Length: 227
Image 1 (cartoon, rainbow, N blue to C red):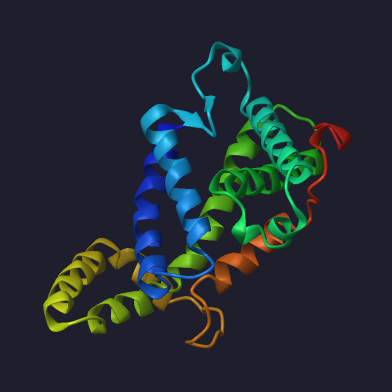
Image 2: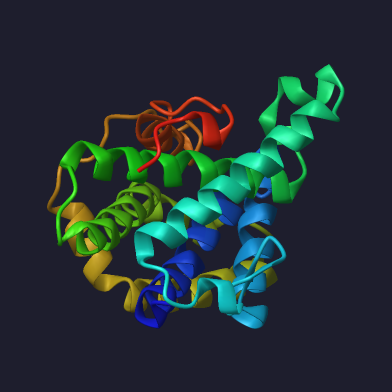
């Protein structure tokens, strides 16, 4: 595993969680947040992804592309099995799916989008390097969309709750300002999406993720282009 990438994502998720929990502590996106937390803890603590051991011998010697293909296929099978054994009402809204199916569906779509990108680039000796670069860019794009909400989340944290709770919130927000100073500078010096202040904190992330993943229909992995 790329432990540097894992450490970086871990640090970023701390800020992303603060933004989401501050702006929308309840509501339809709670399952998505829970899915992210559960899957990430499983990865960090047990080195597993949806019960798949990331340290098992069958992964030894596999290239990053082959590993991504394998886990994208596993994710696809989990989603398809779920759809075949679940009533229509549950299927109507993916936000109501179980946390593991939400995670598998996200893994499948983003993984397949990256694999299709590599396929369009053709076969060459740099394919694994391109995969890791593309994966890093995808993660950065989704997180940066979330971070555009950071200034507003800090302001909300300072102004919410009872006076006693507000002191704690201000203290936490002050710490975040210090830790995210460079992020805030980048946000201030770049043109941000023109969205209404009352829109969901998830607007940017959802729209960006759709752009990244909607090119990929959820159909059996084995029936598609093999990269």
